[in-house]
Length: 257
Image (tube, rainbow, N blue to C red; front, side, top):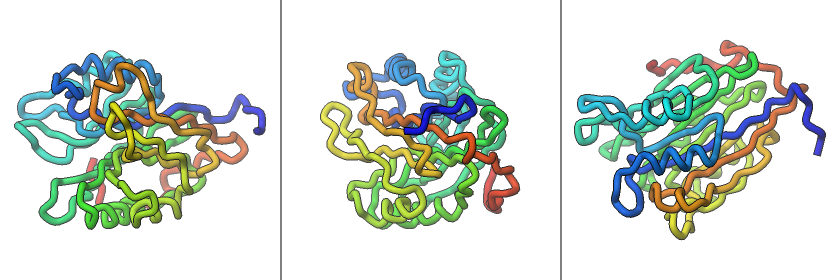
């Protein structure tokens, strides 16, 4: 392996379906989610199944962000039990831009993606947190829509993370993503106690920036949610990271911020 240059970008990212902070024992204990996040010590975390500040003011996201000294970004998808509910992002780096994508299909549960640009060492990192549908006919449409919106520019570091709900390693959803992001490791993350299915994924472009992916297994992570989190180590070589401007990536026209 090429020695790390001091100018190389090195960071850790993670994705975690927190199941609204409700553990396998049915108890709402956000402190356990916090413990897992502290164990991973990731720089950027994509979260799914998050209650967000709404009409009854859920507090888990701002509480986690405050405890971890990170920026918290909301990605509401729908109103559930009087609260906004959906995706979120935690970042140690300044947030530059936020976009919300609607990935809903027909009458099924609303789905979406939270698309965020963060700034690190004078460069832009493009990060997406998403949660695809439960039904097999939904997911290919949602993956196609995601790829259209991402318009991945290989001069930028792009990280797509989330719960894809995809059970088939070579199904249509994953084949479409493999064509852009390559075939990264896919450790099983569900169910948390005895993980068998690789539902939670991390994808990186350029693929050469991905050093490794693993599920985070600990006493806390096995009970804090019904999913294990997945984490990845990234390194993008300084001589290949040109730091494309926002204008270099095709600007999506349906975003809301």
